[in-house]
Length: 180
Ligand SMILES: NC(=O)c1ccc[n+]([C@@H]2O[C@H](COP(=O)([O-])OP(=O)(O)OC[C@H]3O[C@@H](n4cnc5c(N)ncnc54)[C@H](OP(=O)(O)O)[C@@H]3O)[C@@H](O)[C@H]2O)c1
Image 1: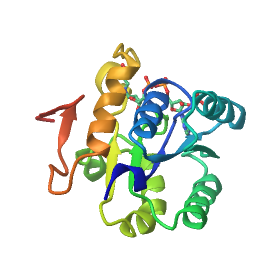
Image 2 (image 1 turned 120 degrees about the vertical axis):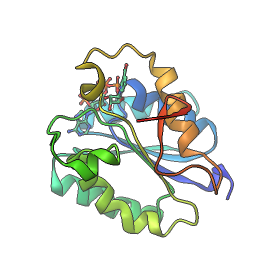
Image 3 (image 1 turned 30 degrees about the horizontal axis):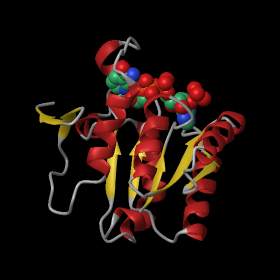
């Protein structure tokens, strides 16, 4: 499946790595739902990309800590596209549950899991689904991350667009496969 026919959701995308991830994905022809918890910040970010010529970016509100918001996003994707090819769990949200061993082993926190669970049926409709979980900065540097956002986005985008048969369930440091 060519990237031009793929649909993606990027969480926490009104700024930072998420915003750059949307830009790089849409540059590859992917249709991207830019999500943000704040309606104004999200529509502003989307308008900025649309004005730059990226017409295949649309906005939908998503607060990963709000069940109704998650359900609304899932309904939107179902109605608009009927499937989801790429999910980038990027929101640096609080509410991490540190003793959720299984989720942590998968490099996920509980709020990310709620969104992923709601979108799983749509991912299962894709012939080539991808989930990219961006590691919480809290986990590695106590909110002092200094990675340039373009560089952070490159890792997410590379993983989102991996061809079929590529690595799965692995940990990457930016674009490099590494030990967790
Ligand atoms: N930058 C680094 O050096 C670095 C290094 C390693 C890992 N990371 C990870 O990469 C990801 C993005 O980092 P970043 O530097 O781009 O962070 P950032 O600039 O703080 O952006 C975080 C994004 O997440 C959104 N967000 C926060 N809570 C949310 C919620 N409840 N629901 C939906 N969205 C929510 C924020 O929205 P608001 O604007 O509304 O707050 C914002 O759009 C994070 O997971 C971070 O932990 C970053």
